[in-house]
Image 1 (cartoon, rainbow, N blue to C red):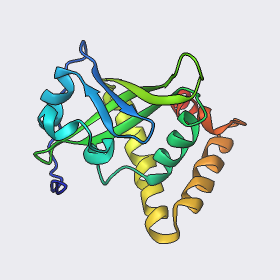
Image 2 (cartoon, one colour):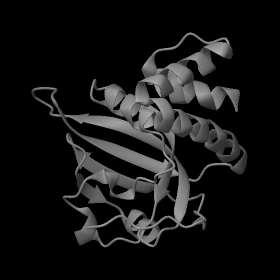
Image 3 (cartoon, rainbow, N blue to C red):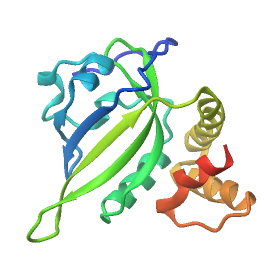
Image 4 (cartoon, helix red, strand yellow):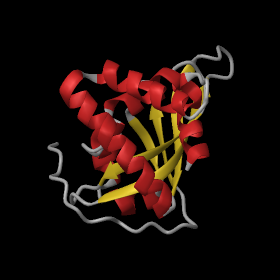
Length: 174
C-alpha cells in the first residue's frame, strides 16, 4: 500500500471522542475503533495487520518515535503530540496516551494501546514549530543530533528529565 501525498488540509476532530487503536509488540495494528477508521479514512481491513506507521505524517520527526518506542518497549507509558496522515492526504493533530499491555502471567509486553483526542490550537502551533526544527536537524545531520537538540531545548527550560518524560515536559512549557 502506497503512502498518500500530504495535502494542507486539517481534519477537525470531535473533542468529545477518542481515537483508539491497539498494536502487537512490533507495532502492527490489531484493533481500531470506529472513530479511528472514520478519521484516517482506511477500512478496517486496510488497517488490521499493517504497521501503525501507515498513518505517520512526514512532518513528524523520527526522534519523537525513537523516544516513544524506547519508552513503551520498557513497559513505561508515555504521552505525545502526534500529527497523523489520513488516507486522502489530509492531516490531524492529536494528543496520544500510549500504554503497554503485558501478559498476565509472564509480564512480557504483548502490545500497546493508544488513546487519542483533539488538542488545542496553541499547543499545535508551538509543537509544530519545535517539530519543524527537529525535522530540519534530522534531514541535515541525523536523528542523533535531533535528539541532542531536543534534550538541550528542554534543559534550557530548566528541566533535567528522562526520555519517558520528554513529551510531558514539552506540555508543561506550553
